[in-house]
Image (tube, rainbow, N blue to C red; front, side, top):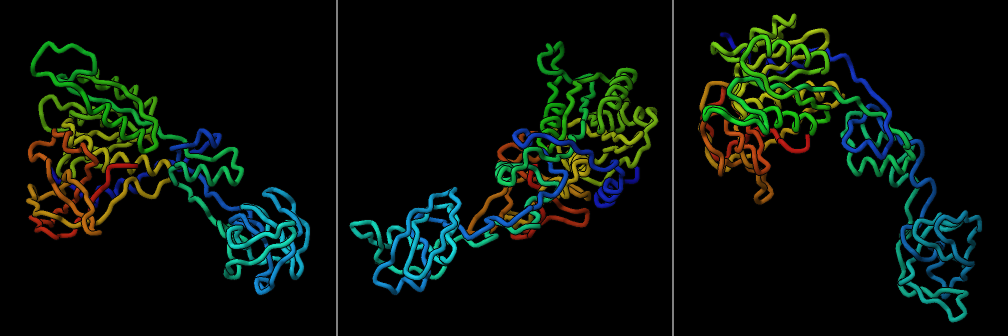
Length: 405
């Protein structure tokens, strides 16, 4: 079987038409973790007028040379200050208050002494011109794009939007991803084993959690045995209820690997089958009526890695996100032995030492593509290409981060 290069397969995936971004309005309080479907643009300057950033006295800077300055009164936060400050005058002004007309500097309370009758101040320590005054537009200016479309909404985004009085927020509708685990040897949670050869299903739970973390709505469809009719019905139900159907198992060349044959029988067009990657070379991507099928290998590490590489980009595209995951450059802190001629995705550790981002493999087991525990402890995926061989310590490599999709 001729295998596509990893780069070609990603290009083909990127060319798929997902039908554009579908969106809805939700309350700001319910938008945490959702993906913005429009830019958040500042309607006005913030602040709209010079504002005190500390408690003190609003003055003309030139008056700092005077022996004393007359106090006109107080200017609490939230008050509409209309008095005009003339030479030799000041107004006691509090944090967040509008600076009175005629003033250009705020001298902090601790820098002055107040007369016994509280009618004037004496300067104990001078301050620079404009001290403790927030200028117009310090936070942002009218027309600034504050949060870009495609951003995952976190606490900071919610705070900024609350400051803009965004009661409702336009977000991308979550694509629905149905996850199926196939194989007569697998048991779902809670099922009793009647054979020592059976194993507990983890793929469907792993992938549902991943897709939920990436902003999708995951549908847990459970397990199905290696039976053509059962698999066919499971796929038909999944296609009826989801935008993306992800299956694990049944895509290799064994006698009981039925998924690879059933997908075309569903009337789906196979986009590609077989990519020169390790793990996961038997991956299949297909489409039917604007929906997509990702048939992934059955081993836990392999299915997880291929879901990152091919499932997350589809979800990101439907959500309007620029990148499905973060990729960084880092330096090998130890040598690396490449195990195949394919593009490899190796579990690794990321650390920062002396200001450098380093890649290591402490605690990572070398073995089959079933070792899901290699992805514990905030692990990442180191990427090596088809043309790469063994790598020496100090080589710079690309790394896919597996947190905060």
